Amino acid sequence: MLSLAGRTKTPVLPAIPCRIGGFGGAVGLGRYLTDNAIEMLVVATHPFAAQIRRNAVDAARATGTPLLLIERPAWERQAGDRWTEVPDMGQAAAALGPTKRRVLLTIGRKDLAPFVAAPWHDYVIRSVDAPPPEFLPPHAKLITARGPFTLEDDRRLLRDARIEWIVTKNSGGAATHAKLAAARELGLPVIMVVRPPWPDVSGLQAARVSGAEGALAWLAACHDAASSAKRGV
View 1 (cartoon, rainbow, N blue to C red):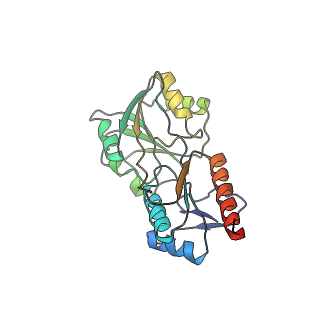
View 2: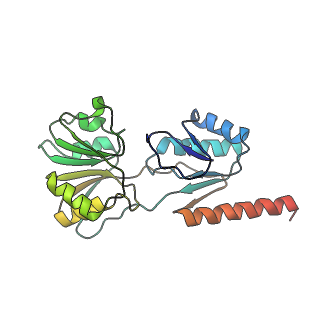
View 3: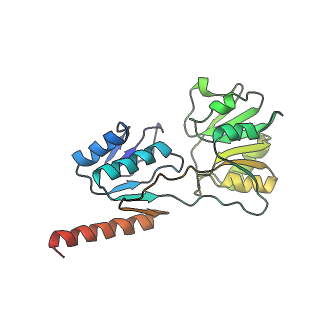
């Protein structure tokens, strides 16, 4: 069963059973695991989806469900990058400073409040779905687009919009990495919001992998162990 939060209006869904919407916190998720006889819980959320991660860990702990954490590798600074790493969006907005800048925001549509509070900058906001108008900084330009983006796409965007700074999250992956390569080429500074830490999984039957291959291997191992237990091996 694939569970999506429902944040994206038109998600691209695989051909497997799917549910969309919240569970009602860790207690609700634990109840869902029990009521549906779920035997393995795979957390493959966005690296910045901290709340559902905490809920998943708490639900796995409460129900004794084996837990797999999937996290794609973070982007790493390369020669020529001009990164300023910050812990959150408030610090990212502050790092832009008091001087007016032309800023590309690729942070999703839920984290715009600190930039609304810094209205003297000119913002270009790229998001899969459009944020509500009241969430946008004054005079912001909105681009609704879904990755992957090519280096040529992002190079053109940065040049045509006369971008001076980029603010982004260290999401990792290839779909939106091109903006970092384009920024490196053009010598542009990047404010990089670092990932929140994983919640504590001590005492759980838990593992962590970086992608689909490792996840399938873990699922196969759990299946084999369960089959052996049923056979009394």
